[in-house]
Length: 101
Image 1 (spheres, helix red, strand yellow):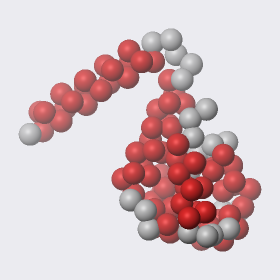
Image 2 (tube, rainbow, N blue to C red):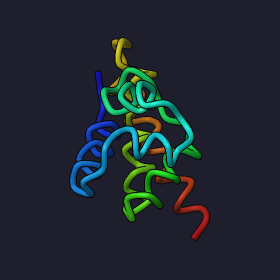
Image 3 (tube, helix red, strand yellow):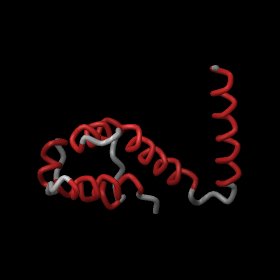
Image 4 (cartoon, rainbow, N blue to C red):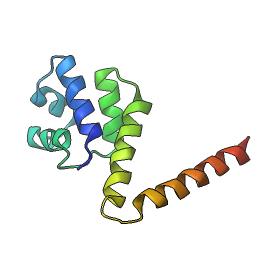
């Protein structure tokens, strides 16, 4: 199970010498919920990702990217054609980006 986001927020919490209960209180969630988010058993909401970035003084784009990557992985992980589908999606994003320029 992909859990890049959970691993990162746990690393940031520990680097900031914060306990799970302290962070959970700031996010207005209970400690078991935070523990599940860090382990990848629960998904954080997008609004919570922004709160984590603010609380840890972390780059919100990095955290949002990891969070979204975990979401995409969970969506396609059991599909045989996942890699091909991701390549097609990537080319669509590149095309869309070029058209905006």
